Length: 67
Image (cartoon, rainbow, N blue to C red; front, side):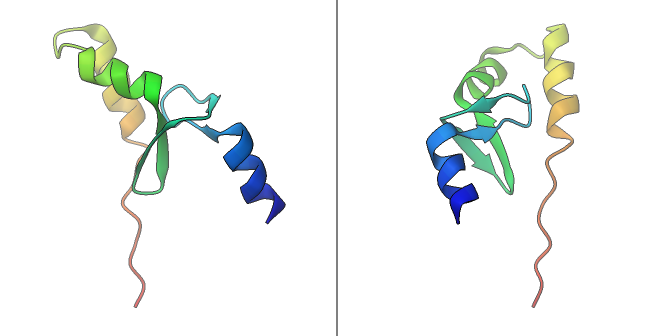
């Protein structure tokens, strides 16, 4: 329980920049900070940084559904 409270207070680790940030979005079970989200949106597909974002997003996996 204290770990959850600490995460809410301090933030979560971003799957892109790997830094702990207080605000962002969740994609499946991964967290993407607001700064990285904005960077991905603003990056053109011809920009070399686009490949960086694509490679980092490969870490995001769809969670399995257990029934």
